[in-house]
Length: 505
Ligand code: FAD
Image: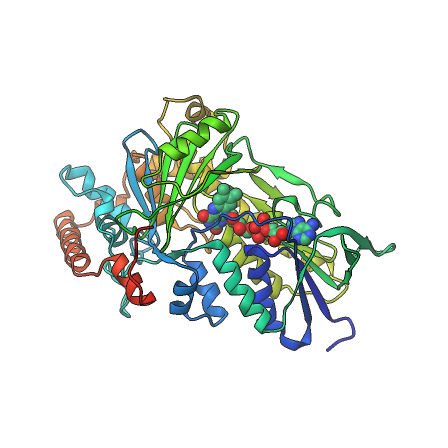
């Protein structure tokens, strides 16, 4: 090991981000590096963040976590996507499933064929009916996709919905079993090297001192190190992502264990429902310039489909991202690096990526600037890609029933997103520049779900034999119905994994 090598890493924060950072670092570095995680007993975690993307499975897999054990210990359920209600207009409903429509043909996703067929066949089933994940979601069915050959009956993916506190605890056990030291204490002061400005040590309020070579800031919205020490700055995206508040409350389980998260648009935002094995997680995300906190609380409780198990908890945030997530020997991961609001459950995914990049661009003790620059570029780009996708949901609205939705319809949006919308409206095409994020199927689900229909269809699809194409689609539709009909229910599968029946609270 070089004499410049990092010998001690200090992670500040024991929320989802802190333990999701500690676990892979412990696995990768083993005994070659001391890892200390400091968490404050007096400052709690944000306590939400229970709906994920399919990439969480790769993260867990890379740690060698057993899927069955994970489902049992974190009270997890399976997630095929998000059920959007009242988005676009009141009474509207559509499903955004993960990787719904399988492989592309000649770079043309299935929605392009559907658009062409629907033009001449008004009685065609809706686009969603070609999607196996939507069919499974509507019937509360779930099995993991299987089979080597990709086809319409396994062209879906899945993530998890889990108890965030239990997941952090699970990773904590994992990390501590691999040598991570956990320190309970609150950081009161940060010592910097007088010449380099690097962080030298943290002083805890009780007088203890923790030195280190690399400091990972997982302190949540406050960004204790990245902002408190380095004044990294914040790019505020409130003008296009206006929600800045949330209230969260657990509720009793419903009759059905849905394999999806539900997002219902409300007059000044939207409400989530995340089913877990032991309870539903619920929250109302809203903009307090358009609705008071009191009213938001009432909207949340009125929107529950089962009895509340607690009183709502208030949260406040500013959408946007830290200008730099890595400064000198400090790297911010999690809410300390930014937050885009939870509509598409992307925050935990950004943590997964950030930890992966930290390992990929792992520095020596001098933390050369080029590594920090590359990390910052990747993080910034990721936030921007995700931002555009989330803004799309608001911008496409036809709702005029509240000031909030009228604002969203008129608000300025990034040129990158305007281009995507124009390209789709005029020519029915979607171009994806981000190979790791939401793909054309996801954009199509949101655009078509909002009722946007392009002016033209693809001229090369126009030239195909339409009768054969229609026949093919009808067969796919029938196969999906048949396969989903034979699948087990979601609750039954979860009960089989955990060995315990799902009980209403
Ligand atoms: P926190 O959970 O806030 O943890 C901060 C930690 O820092 C705590 O342990 C605290 O004790 C410690 N700390 C702070 N200051 C000090 C100090 N001075 N000394 C010592 N320790 C300190 N993400 C998703 O992917 N899916 C979702 O469905 C989702 N829903 C969300 C809904 C809402 C309303 C919000 C606000 C967020 C949501 N997120 C979601 C985001 C998700 O909750 C976070 O990304 C995730 O929980 C990580 O949080 P964190 O660990 O960065 O911060």
